[in-house]
Image (cartoon, rainbow, N blue to C red; front, side, top):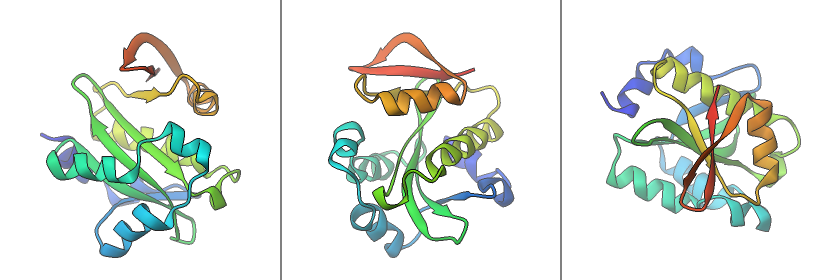
Length: 162
């Protein structure tokens, strides 16, 4: 069963917490927000893959990539997230609109993403790749219980959920 199929089996109420909701992209407006409406800082652009990269991978291998929006408690889009299947683990990449940062949404979206992947397949490890210079993301992942592994994903550091 593919990652997307496993995620679709997770109950709809599990896709949210009291602060954020993650939902698969389904409309043209979702695509427009992710590609053009979600604003990033210059620093963020250096550290994250652009939306078109994630959407392209989802187009080419939809069973292994599930592009989603992150919404706040009012159901307004505030960021982009893409679940991904690696050879030996599940992962995600994500970013929040610069206008929504500093409110705790990023941490809560990461907690929710981790919960969703564990509900989808409790036996599959969760790993995240992060640029070595992206110390902010590394602190976030450590605060969520991830630990750095000795392996690399290209030039990126790899963290695993404990």
